[in-house]
Image (cartoon, rainbow, N blue to C red; front, side):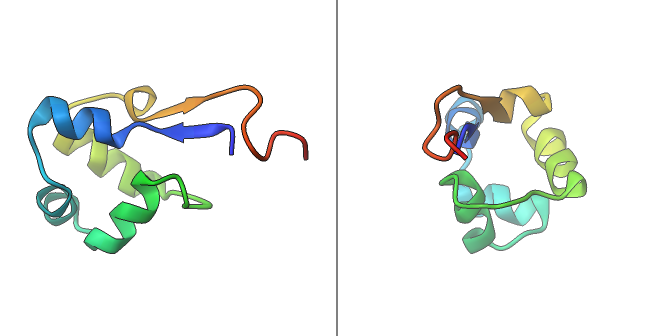
Length: 74
């Protein structure tokens, strides 16, 4: 998928674990792992906003587009 999720980068910068972030955001660690590993098909704006609030970042710090991703051929 051409959308890359960079939650790992922000977790490292903030020295947070996946479990701690999931608890603070209000989602399960399993759902956060799906998002973090790029397997999510969608993300709710409320979840994205909560992630940005907890991680003190902008949506663009968590999500980026990469040309030529695995599904880019359509």
